[in-house]
Each structure stands twice: as structure tokens, then as C-alpha cells.
Image 1 (cartoon, rainbow, N blue to C red):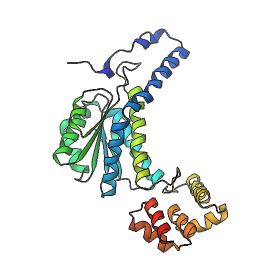
Image 2 (image 1 turned 135 degrees about the vertical axis):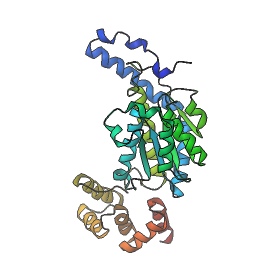
Image 3 (image 1 turned 180 degrees about the vertical axis):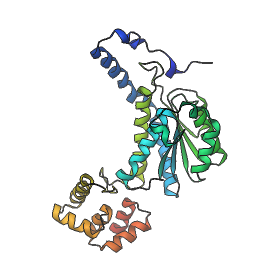
Image 4 (image 1 turned 90 degrees about the vertical axis):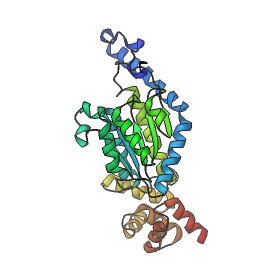
Length: 299
């Protein structure tokens, strides 16, 4: 069987045990510099993946990340950041890891070897209108393969993220994202370059999808959930930045808007009452950009 890139030995780090701390981190830094360039080559596939995700979200679907080990944890991490950042339901982008939540803190290595577990999780969490994103550094993790195969049986769109080329995962998904970052500095430790590459791509997938579904205006998080003091202050700052009003006015209007930053902005920009702003947002399924354009066209 052909040896995977992610399992090969890295010649630059073959004497790690003899290197100084500075030499170790210098080698790691040089290796990490390669990651962004590898991702650049995969931008066309990443773009296609995002288009499918946006289409699913706009048609009442969800995005389900599936993975095991580091890959699974990165999927759960990315998904868990979406509700506070973009004000979306925790189910809109969901991370599912082999072995369940316990696997987030403990290594449950045998879970990744179960095709059936992947099948079961897809049956549990996935609907026809969703998109499933399989994340596997090796590109051949049985749990992820099982999940993708079951998703395809259901007629669900599939995306694969792997750090090898010509893998089983890449051959069975609709959109294969291949990130051949090469051998790790610690042989086989794919929490390193491979993990960094996967995290960077997941950032792109979720962020661009949220932007294109109206959760961001300019580069501001207009849909954030102001669940703590820091985020409450950020919401007030966003309202002021977009509308030009002072902090006191922004806070007063935000209070009238029930803490919904989008409603507050629309109220100020178009002299609307909160009920009108809320109804226009609801009409466009919470898409702020479409609601903004709707208001602008009517004024």
C-alpha cells in the first residue's frame, strides 16, 4: 500500500532530540509557513464547497462536520464558534466527532475505526437538504468514510478535507479539498501542520458561508449574540460604526431593539420601528443584507 504523506518522516526534523529549543521552533515555524501556500492551491475547491454550503443554508439545510480525533475536534470547535460570532442556531453548523462529546477531551482511538458508527451518526443528525463535510487527515478514516457513504445514499451533498492526495475520501465526495502539507515534524502527528491546514480551511468554509448568507455587513459581525459584557460593548460599537450615531444613542436604540444589533441598525438607518425591522428580517430569513436592500429599495 502506498505510504501516506502524513505518515512519512520529515528529513528536516530527523535529529529533533539533539536540537536546541530555538532550533526546534525554527524548524516548526519553517514547516508551518508552507501551509498557507498549500491551501492557496485548493482555493477553487474551497470555493465550490462554500457555494454548496450557502445553497444548503438558504434552503433550510444545515452543515454537518464529521471527523475523529484532531480532525473531529477541529470540526466541533469551528461549529461551536458560529452561534456567538454569527448569531445562528447551534444546529446550523454542527460538529460531530467519533465517540461523541467524551472524545473531545479523551482519546477514543477505536471509534475512528468504525464505519458503522459513521453511518449511525449520519442517520442521527443529517437530513436530505444538508451538506456533510468529512474531515480526515489521512483521507481514509473508516468512521468518516462510513459517514460520507451513508450521506451519499441519502442524496446529501458531500465535501471532503484531507491532507493527502488521491485518497478514498477524495474519490467519494462531491467536492474534494486536498491539502498535501507533507510529513509532520513529529512523524504521524497530524495535530501539527495537518491540523493547522484543516483549521484554516474550516475558518474559510464557515466564515465565507456566514458572510454570503447575510450574517456580516462590511466586515462587522452584525448578527453576533451579545451574551457577555465584551460582546455587548462590541454590539454598541458596531451600531455606532455603521450608522454614525454616538454610543449613548446606539445603546438606547439597541435596548429598544431587544438587543438585536441588526434591528437596531435598520431602525436608525431607515427611521423604522422595531416591529417593522424585525418583520423585514424575518421575511428574508434573518439575512441582514437582503433586509437592508429591501429597506433601501422602499426608501
